[in-house]
Length: 288
Ligand code: SF4
Image (cartoon, rainbow, N blue to C red; front, side):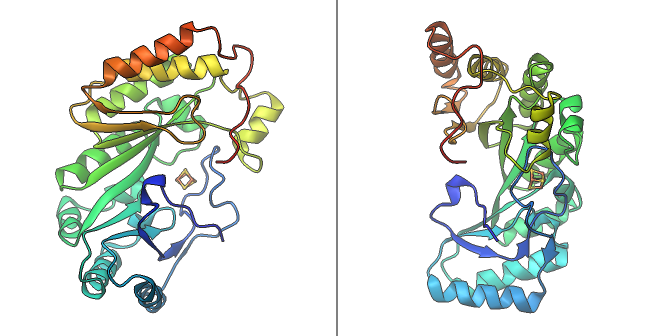
């Protein structure tokens, strides 16, 4: 079974403590199509932790896989973190993928308890702040729920690393998707923000929709214009921004608020250069 992790976790010790994603319905997502969701027993988790300890007993950073580790019950997640703290004496932080729904299943007090046990960064796919786009993409949560989840987690001292998907609204909703996404991020104030471009992958519902003509991918030009508008709408007080995933047309990174002007200018200059494909999405990324 393929193991997925955020690019920023390349140097973390990865320990799989569940399989797949409990939702597994988003139309654009092909990550866990071949995996049934399964929560491992505490005995299995302890065995995985023991074997990971043999690989790197001095690990400081651990990423727990798979798709939504916050979906574990509070009691179990707490027990996992306690075990990690005992078995890895130099442990500094534990990071996980977390969906809005599963974050909201935890009370503020429970989130504080997890933070005290070195849970650090929650990677959450907001994808869009536009409700119609989220419903079309079969996202489980509403934008309002994800905003609340992000705010609640950060109030407990956890860091939110939020992903958005450029082009998810297609041509029809590009303006609404971009404006509502910027507005949602402004309310959430995530510490980290990644913008990826949506690429319909074979085997996903979005790919079938594109084939049947019910979803139209943005052209290369339109995708960068949507990113420019989204960045222009952002009013973030302290956020590290990245758009350097292989799906992105122009790799970019910066810090808000200081780099917002530069990022907008870089995009405006490329949009004015006449070099972008205005008829198609351009060549697909070599790998995703
Ligand atoms: S995008 Fe996230 S929540 Fe949606 S199916 Fe994929 S892993 Fe699950």
